[in-house]
Image (cartoon, rainbow, N blue to C red; front, side, top):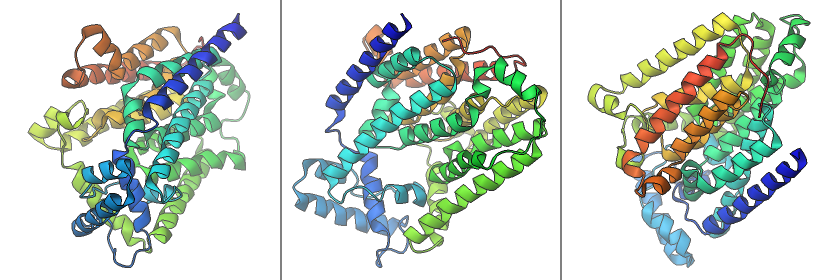
Length: 423
């Protein structure tokens, strides 16, 4: 019966994959266009600051004219919407996407394949690292491919949240699979020295995480929570290795991007541009779904830091009391805190709810709550049920989803004797 159900789930996932590809193969790339142009600016003698306002005006018009001459409708469509470039992503992110074709339509196709493959790989890695069965993982994949608005947005605009999901899945799978399966792991750890010298191979996921933080800093709370967990467990040698490896990954990302753009100054230029963007406070009609936007607009952006500090204190207190090292929950909570408190949270960031949701699927009750949260954040089921667009009320759907996931994740993190995976 298990084999039969798994086969049915695999067929559902393949059907969802085929339908998703057919619907989005020719989708335009509003955000990908920026990455495409920014990657081509590396090494240009006439561009000393890719984030400068004058450069973004001049280069935007230049590439708009190139698009008109290319004969590609897709490229013209995206170039029209980005006549003034809006470069705010990190130089390492731009560098990692320089490999795509110089032909825009081919490059956009490559990006669609990459985003779709990364989403599937990331979800399956996270589910398997959390001990979720193949059948449940594949059914979840099929449902999210078909009906999850956050992933649809990520794919259609050509953003990178699915790439982050895949990297987080690899990170959690590499370091956390044993800790994700519950009491058996606890028993094994009790039979070993608490501060045993880690193997050299354990450095790899931390190198990856260090590079990920410089790729896009919305994962910055993930290493912080792991560091607190190591201190709470008095695993200082392990902490030293992980900090060193993470710093090495961040340094590698810094150097690679600096070489790509000809100077480390590109990082200072990015910090200024990112800071200016972070304080723009886009509104709801621009699909900024951050829960506390009204508070930020009324009292200022400092509320964001206060909320982040409050949630971090809550999680850290639980970590110190329980000495938990549950990798799926720590990674999921690290991302979730950012999503709950950042000034700007785009709809496609909802892809990053999947790590904590997958971690909670190890237990029946929290698994059901996680599915409910994903159902709320998906938006499309709401539109079927009520026959109206989700846009005017999407924060009323997404905010409860974030709160449900946070409460359940903190609750399970506080459990000194977590149950094994049940799905």
